[in-house]
Length: 196
Image (cartoon, rainbow, N blue to C red; front, side):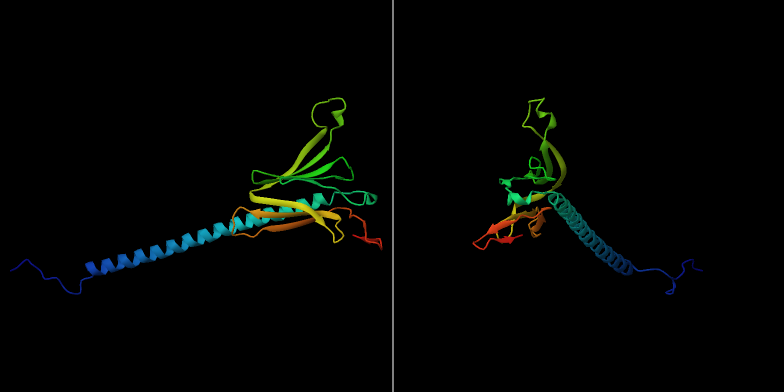
């Protein structure tokens, strides 16, 4: 009598080759799913950055237009002179006061919007330049912001033009044209036509 039993070919189980094929297929599926998740997260991150940038520019556009519309200058002045240099622009007649200014400055990749008004205490306190400055909002980061007076065909200033260059070069510049609350009247030519 023999105690050795023969193994039946119908016994359940996997061979070594079947296990290796299963492991390879599972590894390929895991790699494919992880690459899909990684690509999806990158797309989501870019979409979030684009959304935040767009939202910031829309908020900036709204705030710039709202504050530039608060520039009211007398129509008899015939126009408005804007003090500007490469990094700052000051617009007089903020809320109708010729000594109050709406100021835009670009420093360290940020656009600053401020109001500059006469210091009522300047007469009693002779320190400073006689003006108080109040920052309204700061926007950024941008690679550059160009601003200049917006002109009518008759060369009268009717607002301010901003060209905002995003930090990432793949995005195009954004142009914002904001109109004053009152528009200039200018006399031009021999016919004395009034242009607005």
